[in-house]
Image (tube, rainbow, N blue to C red; front, side, top):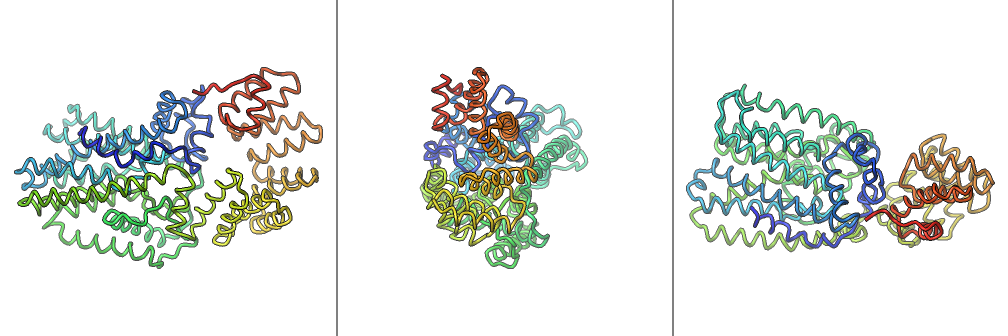
Length: 596
């Protein structure tokens, strides 16, 4: 088990030198002070879902707190825990595969060394596959590796419980049953997509465990159902509050779900063309061959394994388990702008790998050297591919340049590259990417981003036309209003700027950006008290708004309230220690970071 775990992380070692990505890592962790402060534990337990933070996953947040305690906001520590959890998952899969092979296949039961070697190959092929990279190398996806490790440990304990052969109705006397239940609860509190885990246990009861006494077997799983229901309800509420669910017709959802199954098959067998983001067209055409062909493949495979289920139950059970694990993220409830994601294969690929490697082991049982050679060749092909892909996840630009290389018309990738170019002070490059995004998807948001980049690139006339077009496209677009107000302010028309910011607040009263910009106008027109009110409102809406912290600290400083100014400046230093304005204020007020 230890050897499997060590070997499983070797392909992912390049990720250890990566930083926090601009894609979710910064929003969730580095720019979010809520989980790190004195009230962080309360926030994690009661307020960490919804808004920008997605579903309820308190145990994942607690694991981030452990990283913080060990090394502060050092990304190497966060990456290291991801790799460690993946190693635990691989080791647990090895023990699970060994037991399932022993129970399910007489050929492997009679050849103990072949059974052990087959389980070893299953764990290594699954763990070292390039499809695992997104879950392991992306800090945000801690939820996947944490829940995956806990679920596999739960399954191991469940198999221990089954091995005790408890009398029907006395499951509660089994310590292994309680361990399995506790680990499952922890997994659900890490990531709630394992809601169908009870169906996996029931499927194992049918084959290969061949357990009887259906009523007793159902009753022993009722606590699992209760946990799944409670956590799934909380997760659903949190995800719905983000506004991430996409509006796709029922037929489109069915095709997306089947396409996810086809994607799992195809990319597991041939991991080429992998990317961080696979765009879902909007509007979605279910007859598009890109989606319809993999969907048709999934239907054909389902029919074939169902027809032969009695004669050969292993493929049918494996495919059913994969579909159960895939279902919550398959596209039935579309989220965001993607059609599918590599991270969604983390659990569903396990039964497929078990069936494939187990089948090959049985076929080549009489020729163990050929089986061993084949296993070595497969692993040697997977490891460098996984290492190369993991290296792309070290920085945001390289990651999304890969997305554009795979899918040139991916508007989301161009938007990410444009945003990154703005952060790096390259407005001309930002304009280029935003223009590509607008050509593919001329929404108010895309136009607002392009307009702001044009302004920063020194083209205010074109920026104004673009922002006005954004408002014509989407009259209530808050960001476009704020940016148009900022443009008015730069050109000296503070009255027009104030009107734009107040119009934005009328639409979105909690817009941190609108409150901050209005405060700047009020400060410039000697209305300091009103400015302070809006700066506080900006920080209530977004505690990580560094510019608002600086402005409010300056406000307190002008009033001689230096203790309050220092507290605010310290928060700003903790959030953004390299920001020029933060450095200047920190030097004046003699404050330093409290962050390790």
